[in-house]
Image 1 (tube, helix red, strand yellow):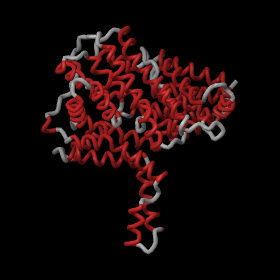
Image 2 (image 1 turned 120 degrees about the horizontal axis):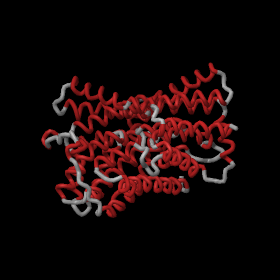
Image 3 (image 1 turned 45 degrees about the vertical axis):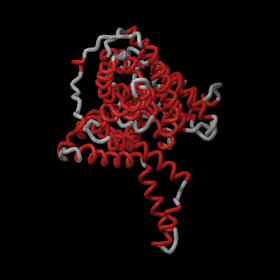
Image 4 (image 1 turned 90 degrees about the horizontal axis):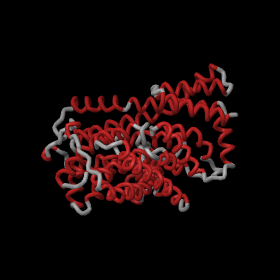
Length: 457
């Protein structure tokens, strides 16, 4: 019976979001209440579960996603993204242009939310296509595939960050494994697949964009642009590494002999410092502070102007926060009603690799709902019980498996599908043959990458 109730709840959620077009947050709350009542929970308990789910899920994520949105805004509007792209094009040359664009898309995609990243890189794609006389999709797909991979695989993006939190995965390790898997996914879905798209020559309407190119002399330097864009990755990966494999560097032991009578004191402070910086929200905050100075104040903007940009950035991520909050409410109902526990016990005996199962559930939800974020956050509530010592599944790999599944075959119910179709002026049929196939490649290669990593870690 619990499995039947869960299936009915998911189908009802799909109907409300995809067909009725009801607001996603409201849909999540309605389904959470309905599932709680159907499973026999008391009305008071349902309310407490929803509150606990929303608060517990958002918690730290408000800081990570909020700081991430602000960081992305500064990277975009300061000209840092433009500087990175222009430099990589010059370095890679026309022959290897696709690989340079894929790398640029990946670097830009780390701090930027997908829709914001899309709006930033598409004008760059148009100008590159025109200046090099290359087909627009041949140029564009490498950048957009990299954006998609960052969106689905890598914290601090909303869905992977939220999934990692729910599964108690180490964010630094998730990011490190995600980058390893991202390399073949971007290579195959971007430059390699992009070479097959030269025959598509849509007529582009450049008046769709209001993005003004920033003069080169007003852009931050390449070093500053790369440093700010990659700082979240640098902090998350290096602190995770030092915390686990290199507790007290030799230099600190040497310093202790100079300033302290023993190593205990300096070891304590070093451990506290690394632990603090290893917190994802602290890493994002430090990255944002660096961006405020290098991409804002140093570029001649007043702190008031920069603060206004940050305020606008946070408003843009409010909808994403509501979706995550709604998914957290449904997840908590599944947990408090014991449905998750029951499903987990049943799935543990299911003749399928848990990582493949997590990918499959997310992929089916993606096909039905459209939103990668909704698909990933709904799937995690179902498969969370599989991440335990009994199954031996590493939570970091389950995060990536669900993230990859949530990207499968974007089609007519996905906003990204229509963004691509309208801006590149393609028919629905051609959008499916280009965009949807690219997303499917990213998803499938991601799963294969997870399974290969699972053999070695």
